[in-house]
Length: 338
Image 1 (tube, helix red, strand yellow):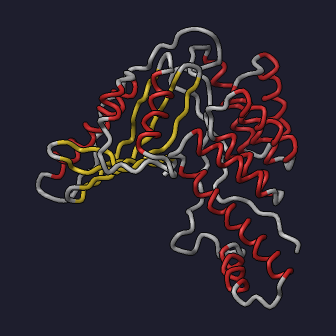
Image 2 (cartoon, one colour; image 1 turned 45 degrees about the vertical axis):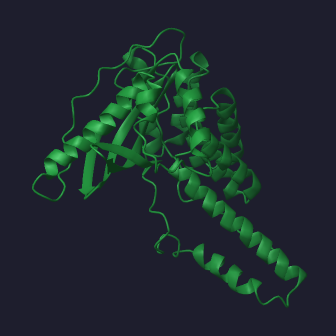
Image 3 (spheres, helix red, strand yellow; image 1 turned 120 degrees about the vertical axis):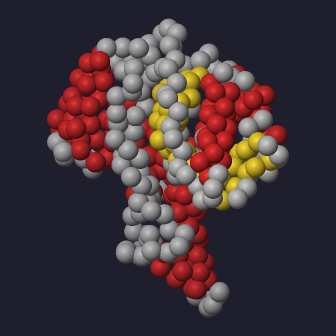
């Protein structure tokens, strides 16, 4: 049975993946120029400028990522796959190139390869919500293929057809995005120059100053603003402990009810986090655009997270769910890209 090409719902179009080391402002302008050309549809000019930049700085992760996006938009999936694959080899800690590889593979109906790429993205960042959602869609398409094969082998099997019809309805044009569980379209995240324009190079990193506290959104109740400030203070302490590689303070920010992403046990998750954090020479975690909502003993905090570690700088949206435990607010769930 012939299967139509398939595109995952959340493709990371433009994402800042610059290395977090000091460089000239001209480099930040190069990122902006390429991004502007890309957004205006001048793909040939964008690719030319990206190649000119990479001729002098061939390992730059941000420009290489942008080049892969340009190739994707230009209808050159084979070249984009080569670009993103090489990026995963040189920077295996980045989940985003794996996600875009999966989108390209899925567009070619290579769902096994798409699944493998998404599993790598999740292994790299277990709280990467976009990859989890895309993996669910890939599993659904793999199920569709299996059900179709089952019908070919046994057309009298009445239990298969309803399942196949359900999956086909889910992916029918105009239907995806209408059901309660269907994802909202992913916003295009435009590559922006970091506060301290950066380029991959050897040497120490100077942490950016911590941002001024952001006013939390008020929750319902007479003491709402005070409670919201308590929640924000808790997540700022979590970020500070992470930046300082204070594993006691960092892990202590998570409650006993914390559910690690995926099927990871709490012990395995803590060991993985310890290995990823303690092994870094430098970490800086800065929060901005913090919004807190409180409902009794539960709270949700949404914010923009600027993370830099050694030669990596990534900005993303993050959501933390917290509960009141004694006189403390502790994290019970976290997700990225939400």
